[in-house]
Length: 174
Image 1 (spheres, rainbow, N blue to C red):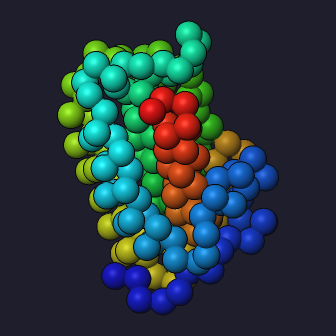
Image 2: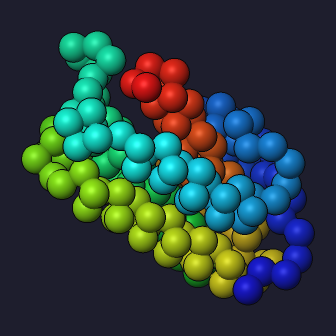
C-alpha cells in the first residue's frame, strides 16, 4: 500500500484539457479523496429512486443512469491508462468518444441498483490499483490520445471527473 505522499501533478504530466478536473481535487491526498468519494457519492446516488434515475435535466442531456455509466466507463479507461503507464508500457493509447460509448451502452435499460454496485466495485479496484504503485510508478509517462500522461495525473483526473459529475448531479438532477 502507498505509504508516501503523492504530490499534485505538474502541468507537463497531463494534457491541458484535464486541468479542469485536477483543479477540483483539494490538496495532495488524492488517495483519501478517491476513497472518500465512494461513500459520499453512493449516499447521494442511492437516495435516487429507480424511476428518478431515468431523469434528464434537459431533453438532449444524459439520464442519471447514463451519467453513472459514463463515470464507470471513464474511470475504467483512465485506470487502464494509469496501469499501462505505471508498468512502463510505451504503446500509445487512443482517445475515446464518450457520446459513442453512451449510445452503445444501453445504460437506461440497466438496473439502477446494479449500476451503483458496479460504480462501487470499479472505484474500489481503482483505489487498489493506485495503492499498489510504488513511488517511481506514479511519475512514469504513458501516451493517451496523442498526449503524455502520468498515473499521478490520472489519479487526480479520476477524482476530479467524479467531483465534476457529482456536482452536476446535485445541481441539475436533484
